[in-house]
Image (cartoon, rainbow, N blue to C red):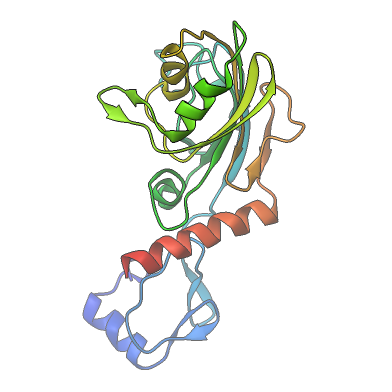
Length: 230
């Protein structure tokens, strides 16, 4: 327990004596905790040492998905001052829509890496010409881009030149490359959902904290990931 500034042996002793609680339950052995757990000693919170922060941002078109001040325009213009946030996943400069921002690295893998609970990301895609349904069937089954086959996905045609697509992987410029195979140029690419976190009625450049339901969804993903590792 580094926050108590004691040795591992002393920490083990406190645990064995039942002086440490995780989520208000006494523990008697070392266990794995995550950022959604609260560890207390003598009624004092010792973990997490800083408040977890979770936001969603509607990234506008034309903004680089980076916090590097040398690259403009970037995401820093939309973030609260003095909060050490970073983005989970990316959207290219010409794309817009939902980004998740946090100060907690533990949610990266549960959201972006394959697991027993895939996180589907929903996009609205408009293209420059009429779509043939057999193209969408091929995209859903998987197509070859960047020397590999894309994973099967879900697609819903909503007009002659627009569709929704749900992906559970994130190859570089994946949707644009998939469309290029069928001579389709993407004219609008908007991310609407990441799992159970939705863009909703947000406007471009708007930032808002995640609500309790969305945070509970992240907690569920992190706990599932922890169980897989165990």
